[in-house]
Length: 597
Image (cartoon, rainbow, N blue to C red):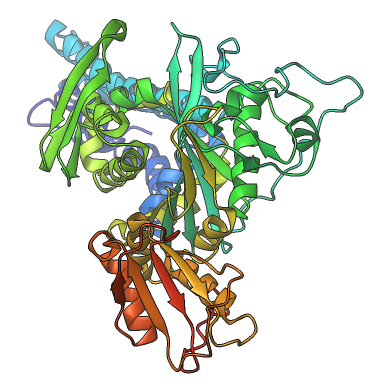
């Protein structure tokens, strides 16, 4: 209902009323003096804002970010945005029209001669059009970002192989060592497709294990190798995180019971980076689509190796990784050791020289990828540590206000780079969990020789690493209980590579074996050969170090002297079959493994 509110000293501007209605529905009508109409148009937005404010106040930023990628939420935002645009357009036009009408009523005086007819000024009409255009532009921007989010969510969380999915290309050739393993095919006659049921969804309280997969896709060479395999393990109670990296040259990884073990045997004989390609089209081995089956297989196999349930995977394509880093504005990484690589593969297969100095470096996407992938100047083990460092650096720099201006570029990069089977409904919990993690206290494990693997520089399968299952599984099991300093000491002792024999001079049954197992637990390569020293039972322990091993194995010698409370004797013997010999005596402490190694 309109109210002229008495004679006016001057006409109100319809353009101003339209502009104020853009600021908030009803303001333009209040400006014109149509108060009942102003309250009517303002009521609905007030109610919506109150409802949204109640929701926002009850949720934290991570709940909101997780909700933002839910399909129903994105669809609802799109529909509500269109309704809001139409509603605001209606309010703007009505405020313009009502103000002009009230101006005519005011101009008619007492109304005896009828309502005055005031012409619409072209400038005022142009102003209305401009206001509608600006208002609509804001809603178009919201719709664009909403569609981008829909596309991103469908690409990352979908399983249809859309959005230029790198894993949806024809089956590439398998690189790596040849073996007698079966060639990939659709199914094996007589076998049925495995059921789609797998590990139950994460309940929010159990330890959560997620497999991060870095894929090296080279379309010109027909390859699709999973060169980066990092399992991120999170304890939701303590907010502790451990990262486990498995080198790509690892072979003889144990296989879970079922069709894959029937086909290959108890272990996978090839290098682990070729496993995805070998089984991605084998519908008789693992459930899933042609895109997800290989990743499901990797989860199952690495879960068998580590003795854990790997619930989800996140795959990142190396080529798209550079675009993601660039979209984030680069990555600032603390380079601990200078990186020199004279044979880094460049364009057209030509080698180029890479040098990255030590210190804090701000890298582009291409530079960060080089830093993460280079291995000729070091080895695969250093590379695994660098990859973990890059991931942590990006996690620390994922600042939402900084990323907002780069949303379109980041969405485009992520939609072609990242794939996962993490359910969307878990995103709020996972984002909240990630926010409470201290990235400076993450425990990092790279399963390298000699402590975790046995290295073969040359074998019928080429350069390979054979895992020491007991040590790897113990490290994974006790990742959150083991003192990081103990773990570092173990790896340092293993790196020295000393060989130790323990001889049972005390005649105490099983003592030499127990001590050898204890030394293995500490990282020393020890064994207890079935040999008894000549003579009677010595009073105390003796340690003999042969042929200058004290110079190359100082940490091992120091550990043994401290453990047994004696000083080592140095000896020269060209016929010695080991570097250090321990002979137990009456006073030898009965060292043994702790109850939970």
